[in-house]
Length: 461
Image 1 (cartoon, helix red, strand yellow):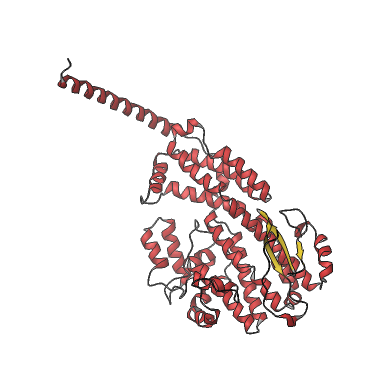
Image 2 (cartoon, rainbow, N blue to C red):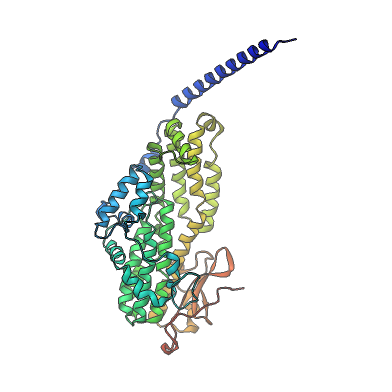
């Protein structure tokens, strides 16, 4: 019978041998991991050249970051200080305090309190303030509105790894409310000039290089601003003639260039580089994996894998929506799952790269929204022409059919549709043909019929 002491010694020896074997295996793995990294491929060199070429004093992204700076402070210089902390992985608490702290200049209302002001006259949403309070609220936030408009004069936009100031969206809503107030006060030309400046601003920002987080914010800003044109021309159709050339140029559809796919690829790659070179402090499970990838991952292999993916990803974003969805599914199968050898040799780097790739290929809804904005620009262009050229209702279907491929519905390949009952041109939702995806209503033939855009039936079947 084996004595207890002998059994303990046997087990102890086994544990020592197992531990020694594990140390040997880890040593071999570490040696292979450190010595088998790849040389850099030329593709990543192109992506790496996309540095921030816009001075802080002319970068609207820096201004947006500093929009809520304390009263009396140079908010552009303040935004540049916040940017420096972001780029240097400064303390998150300090960054949040500089952007959202109690000493900052914040809107006196929340976005949910003024969201219904994008369409005054519609039933109030829960918690939304009556539009009668707009003059008071706009007066309370005059400094923020002035700061926003000063950004319109800057020359460019280069995103800061998707960082933004939540004050921005609220102030954009207040700016649109001010335009509505101008219309109610019978000042359509003033409202038009404000609309023009804001649309050009959000259009330029959306086109600037940025990550998908930044693009999501840009799509929201664009999606809020463009629909105001409908009410503007509904209230003052003469603007379509007075500013015809300017409107047609401003509303010209840009296709995929509106979101700058190459800029997205470069910005996403820059974010990966930043996290590899200087991972965030360890605050969460995700930060731990980033830290491990930075210190134990094969950096060149990660860069090569991600840059190879991005070289196919940017062209995929330029395809039609259906083809883009199909291509993103293919890229997901090709790049999301590294070869078994790479997973064994570099598990942390493989997981790190896969997380970035997964985030990129799962942006289908934002890609769709970018296409929707392009179609709405086509609708807006058609609306300006219909008003300016005084096309009669019975001739509108023929006019739409002859408008040419640049103004057709890219989701169907056919002309935009006409709803005579609502006097609206529209396109169907590409995901559900029974719903309207977007529309513009033409002003009434008889101005005495009112200046407020009426409700429309969004259900088609």
